[in-house]
Image (tube, rainbow, N blue to C red; front, side, top):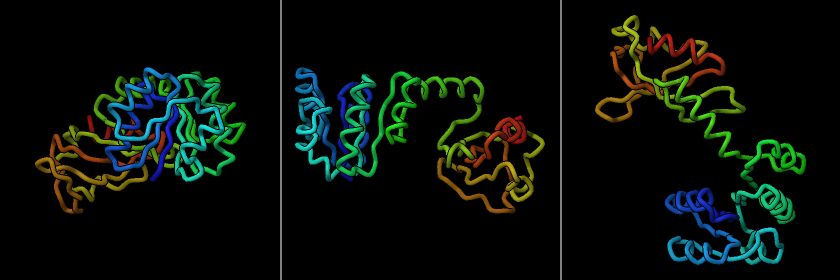
Length: 216
């Protein structure tokens, strides 16, 4: 995939490095000349120094060939304007970072549906670390209809039972477990062991019930 990223700050640079490690073709736009030079020396990608709210500069990135355009600067107005400009090039996927959650509606009103607030996401993750100390979130499905979580079985009431006796239910299904660090698909007659680390698909709104079932 070809991905154009606007913004070479911490978010944009970290994202670019992750995508490059994943084998993606990246072009990064950064307006600060000093930062631009530093990034160009360390990033295995094309780095263009300039303003991503300029149509001519966007065309220099071959924006019409991009599969994704991602605006990651800390300036919501610049991100919004660049996303509006990019829409005319029929880029199939446009994603914007929003620093102020109050601005999210403005992005959606102009047709930018993929809006990410790192500050809000970080706060939500911290909240989950406090309220879900025994579970690690791996993925959210659909529009938050379900989550895939890593959990540890510590409820002695289910230890020794067969997996088919505890899963699936209307609230969750145990997808996998781990043995000696290797992922294993539990078979119906396999026995549940205390301390087993399992990956669980959990229906929205049932985490507390599932946590109590598996972890207490």
